[in-house]
Length: 317
Image 1: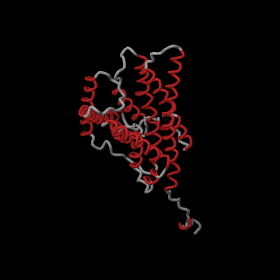
Image 2: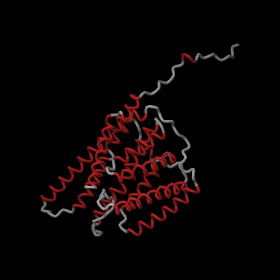
Image 3: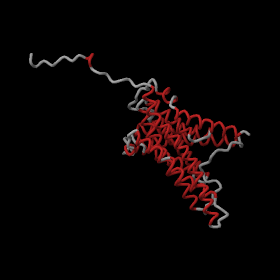
Image 4: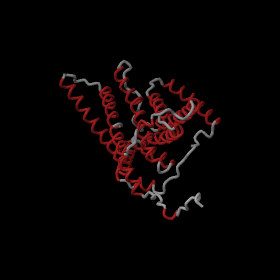
């Protein structure tokens, strides 16, 4: 009959080629290159700015340099360079438009509040436990994000520290890890993307206590980003976490911790399915092998792991 549809021989249809470990490594190498470039820029920019600031100060006869201010100015410009240039170049090479992550969240305001209280409640518990650990082992000294030793009248230093720690870091770290890394890894498995992006985020913090915290926070922020389909909520939570670290009034911080813990417990037990993702991509069978076989990624892991081991050993010496 004329109306009969032609029979298609499925055997001649070209099926899509299965991705190999080599295919995954090609994409992962750009991320690894960005992370290595980030490390190099941190060292180079921080060192260069320190030398330049000291040279300028001495040339104008300022022999008593405000080292806290110099540290914060250096930190601001180091973050602006190291947390932007490498990852923007990586996104360009992978043909990814970073602005697509800065869209209106797909969750309601009420759900955002629940996520915020739960995450900040977990953050509060971890901070209380780490404080107890540090008090138990006074030899432990790790990089603080607070304002210990800063004068309350030195408003320029305080402002620069807030810009660096509470504004620049949350915005560009979320673009890099919950935006770029989570997106690239997500094509090869949702759970792989969450763990791998959080692992790299944790390693870049350089010591055991902060790395463990960053790993847990990274997982929570990755889940929030996947749920919201936007990095804006993650940026806000990251901003809140870093801002609280800068509050010099201890009793007020503990009051906030109490509110977060109680609020987080209430939200979790009334919405126990909050961490359940609507859609997930099964892990590709080569995802972890390809990640750890990528030379640039492997170099980043080795360098930061050695740094963490070194700082841990130094605590007990």
